[in-house]
Length: 91
Picture (spheres, one colour):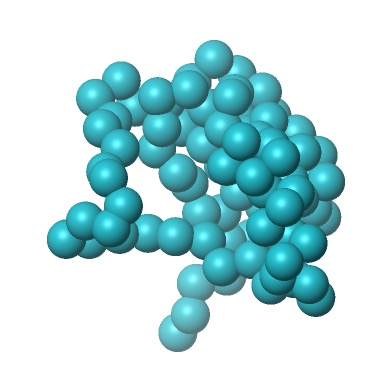
C-alpha cells in the first residue's frame, strides 16, 4: 500500500535558505510560498515545490568530489540559453 501523499517536497540543507531560495526563484520563476528564518519554500504549483532549510553545520563540497551527491535536473529547451541565465544569476 502506498502512502497517500499530495506533494513530494525535496529539501536542500544550506547555510542561508533565503539566499538560495531567491536564486532558484529568479532562475525558475517560481513563487516563494513560505519564508521563515530557517525554512523557505518555493513552488511552481500545488504539486511542484522545493524547500531550503538552514543547516549551520553545512559544508559545501568542491565539485567534483567523491561520495554521496544530490543534484537537481532541470529540463530546458535551450541548454546554452539556460546556462547563460544561470551564470548571470551567479550560479
